[in-house]
Length: 312
Image 1 (cartoon, rainbow, N blue to C red):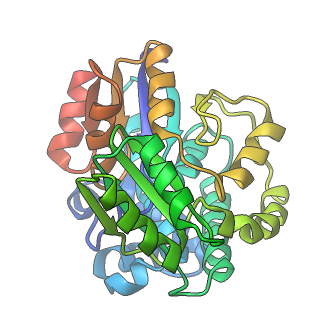
Image 2: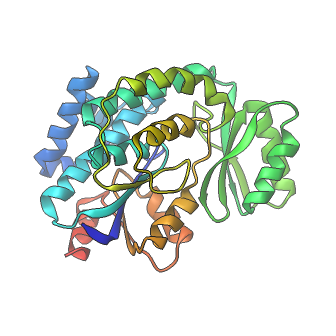
C-alpha cells in the first residue's frame, strides 16, 4: 500500500448518460463489472447508463447503483493496471458505499442492492416536490448555518454538505430552502441556486428512511475494511464495524463533512488523491479543501493513463 495515496469515490450528481463509454469499449473489466451488478439488480444497468433515458438514470434508486458500479469498474481496472494501492479510501455520501466495496468490506452485489434500497427509502421519506436542496457559494459555513436557522420558521432546513471552503449545500422542506436561499443572498452569497434533485439528502427529513434502512444494513455480512476508511459523519478513520454501520445510518440525516475528511487525509500524510468514478466533481473540490495535494481523475482513457503514470 502506498501511504501517500488515497482514493475518493463520488456521490450523486456525477452520473451522465454515456458515462465510461470510451473506457468500456476498450476494457472488458468495465463491462464484466456492470454485468455482475445487473445480475444482482435484475435489469441491464450498462444499457441504462449508456442509453438512458436521463430521467430514469436520474431517479435516485437508479442513480445510486449506476454510480457505484461505474466507480467499482474503474477501481477494478486500476488494480489490473497499477501496482499502487491506496492506504486510504473515502466517498462522498453514496460514494462511501463504493469505498466500502473497494476496501472489501462488502460485495458489489450486496452494495448495489443496498444503495438501490437506500434510494427507494430516501424517495419515499419525502414526497416528490416537497423537499429541496440548494448550493450556496461564497459564504462561510457559520453564515450559511445562521441563514438556515433564520429561514426555518418551524420547518427543516440545514447545511448538509460542507464540500469546500465557500461551497455549502443546504437541504430541507421546499419552502424553507427557498427562504434560506433568500437569506443567504441577503448575507452576501455569490450564488445561491436550487439543485435539480428529487430528495433532500442528509437533513432531518431523512430520519424515517434511516429507521427503515437499519433492517437492510443488519442483513448484510460486513467485513473489516482492508483499506483505512474515512467516514462522512465523523471525518475520521473508522475500523469498528458497529460504529461503521451506525455512521452509515446517521449519514442519511447528517451532514457530509467533506472538507474535514480531506483535511484528515492530508494529516495522515496523503499527497495524491485519485477520484475513482464518473466525472471529476471531487477533483475540483479537493484542490480547494487542501493545498499542496495532487489530484487525479479516471474519467477518460487519457486521464486514467495519466493517473497510472503518476503513481509508477
